[in-house]
Amino acid sequence: MAFSPDGKTIATGSGDNTAKLWETETGKEILTLPGSLGGVYGVDFSPLDGAQLAVASVDGVVRIFLLDVDKLLALAETRVTRSLTTAECQKYLHVEQCPSEP
Image 1: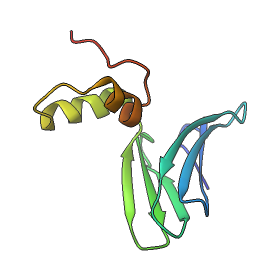
Image 2 (image 1 turned 90 degrees about the horizontal axis):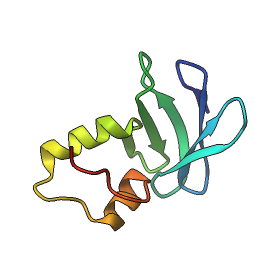
Image 3 (image 1 turned 120 degrees about the vertical axis):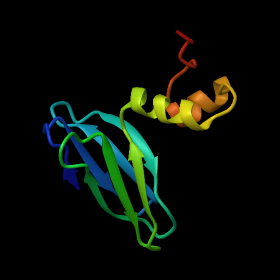
């Protein structure tokens, strides 16, 4: 388990191959992120701003997740050559509808 630098979020790892983010104040689950086979044994926020989460799994795989949707969209825009579908926005951005173009 790890606390975000601002103390507002807790990250936990689990044997069910997931990492979860929780609101510290309410205990409400914010987000579930995938780990790898064997379970998640370590989680840690980027130390300065908490904008990234490292998720370490038993099989030796470490994934780095961008937690700020705006930063994730900016990164995606530099790499994607087409618009995301609604299903892709729901799956990868965890939003009901894709953000509209400016």
